[in-house]
Figure 1 (cartoon, rainbow, N blue to C red):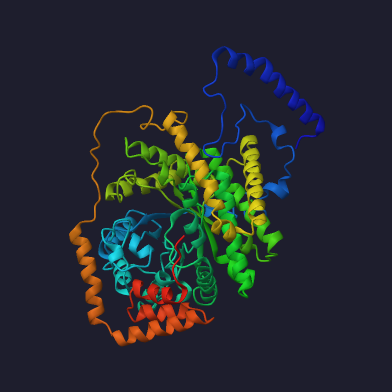
Figure 2 (cartoon, helix red, strand yellow):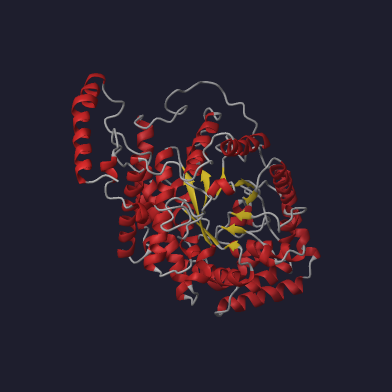
Length: 556
């Protein structure tokens, strides 16, 4: 490293360069912007970074080595030199049969993990024939009304050989129970089931609004899942603490970090309060981040996230197992950056965002289809999205060395800056009584809304250029094929669930639901009862309604 005299000389050289070389040129030709800032965070970007900008860094304490604390450089020692990230394309077509077909297509094309998208009624705990589901069945993903649908989705797919991520929150316990039941019925040992449920209800109150129950019982269900899975399905990640949707709602990179890790703190505290040992459940926690357009800001964000979680688990929760302190995360490219105008431009956006995720050390990755601003992606667009990852993995060289941007004066400086800003936000959250209280008081939501308003104003005034939207526009009419769910398919799904109710053992269903209500009214773990109800072919809506009877509904 550089000693004090070296740094003094570097600072003097920087000042001389600014005054004698950069300054006169900028005065003569001007600069593109009055001020350069990061994509959403607003951190000032200087013209040049030198060792003086990272003079306080201690290599061992702040950067270290892969798989060693503070995990800034990655959680695995070989990273992509040993095994590439999981290519996990998010998919869920209107019906279970169509989703099974899409899953098999993606696996045939080289996808290495499954990621399941659910329609809005399923996410809200309603059956397809519910009045609340009208017009929404199968629109944003697959409709899962019962174990019968889940069995159809995974027909012919060996659950002991593939991991499955499910983007489901309020009814996560129900969908996880269905997945376990499919495994049980096909002879897969629960120890062999691998995957993730999102199960992040605090983020729903903040950004997505697909909640069912009030915060207190919702947190109880989550800790019940932690406890149940630690014993029954230890290789399944019990929560994917999601900054993705927080960023989609308009948050800055630093806010995404702070509020995501803040949610993580809240879940850990709730589990400890419920009597669980931190090292029994923390290794099963995972995270889910957004990859936005500013490549270098995103790389710094991912590196800061790992270091921050290590510090939180080490200093705040006294975790002992290394796995409890390692932040493992999935990344999805930013849906909010996709444009309906000139949709082919989205292929480029997605590629750059995917590069940021890989340079930042993600464990798995979804790349959006170019047409997702318009509809569910077509088969062709998901193939292009998957090929984007495969080209990145096998042709770009980005996966050949670990944390390749480490040591960059700018990257290390920005990593420090994002970490410092995020910790400041977390301190304010603590002063407000913790993340749950800050969410219930709507403070977190207001912070994000203020940023989203400013960014939209910048787009409308032209201060922020969106290629093809407010600059470089064309008058061509879009000619893209659109993937749509027909009214006939929605009707068939409604009829499917009605027929299920006619053919099952309804006495067994009522007994299972009554037992679940009893467990919810007491302090027993609800998960075994949900599994029993699922196996009796109680529907998603019926199971959620049984818990609604006890817990009530949250009205925001």
